[in-house]
Amino acid sequence: MSKAVKEAQIDTVVIGAGQAGLAAGYHLARHRVPFTIFDKNERVGDPWRTRWDSLRLFTPARYNSLPGMRFPGPQSANSTKDEVADYMEGYAQHFEFPVRTAVTVESLSKVGDRFEVAHDQGSMIATNVIVATGAYQRPRIPTFASELDPTITQLSANEYRNPSQLRDGGVLVVGAGNSGAEIAIDIARPGQTFLSGPDTGQEPTRAGSRPDRLITPIFWLLITRVLTVNTFIGRKVRDQLFDPPRGIPLGRVRRKEIPAAGIEPVPRTIGVKDGMPVLEDGRVMVVSNVIWCTGYVPDFSWIQLPLPSKNGYPIQQRGIVESQPGLYFLGLPFLYSLSSALVGGVGRDAEHVVAHLIDRARDPTGRTLQTLTG
Image (cartoon, rainbow, N blue to C red):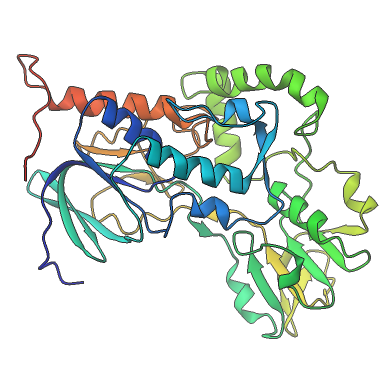
């Protein structure tokens, strides 16, 4: 991309208009920090709109609010993915955030002591950059997927919408975590649907049930206040979840419902034979469809800066990158707590990051923020 087109300088660029980027926008606007938000999607909320049709949040609406604006509707209801998308779009409009949609950021680099955010329509110079692209950026699909027979329909979890996308015949859902289990139930072709992968266990109550609503306040306290990077148990849970990555217990689907729906649990999928997927026990699965629900990997390869990382995630302290002053991250799992990537959990992290950004801009006499003027 040509960098001939230069835009006005600005204090802060936020990359991503999902829940993390919008929460950052709220706190930046509160403190009158000049900022803009870039998002590659056509509309705010599109990453939610494009998930599978039957998807609902595990947490009731009362726990899904961004700072400054309550999530609408019955507060005990488990919101649909479209309701979340519309809420986010309405949130950005309500606060009149300077969001630029359909802008793809291509690289982040340094120009002197400032950052250059290069995108497909030009570039922008900023004193601070908040990366809020989230953790679930690129589906983790095994390399042997390319060896499958080309007549097999292959979809990742973020591409699947509903059963109408599938061919007649068997369906192998690879990955037995929450996404895989919910998609398998959504398809549920008795005798023709197979759920591949190790059992991840299940939560003690079904998401949305009456018992679940009773224990949710305790659960929310646990994931926001107890399971944090500042506690031993929090760090232990973090390491168990992400080193190596693994599925979390089933929230909405009960394990007994899988065989009851005519879905056959099968071992892990490990390769291909004669164009068909092969299981760990050597069984060859003759199917017409494969849906990869094998998780996601972070992708920060576009950041052209020295950036220490672990398991693909940048090393930071509550979103602050000490080795790159002015660079921040939001929306990553366990940025501070187990709730850090959730809609209702990003606000606290965003407040902390913006407070640090403002403190960094103060001069030794304590005078207020020094901003770029163009």
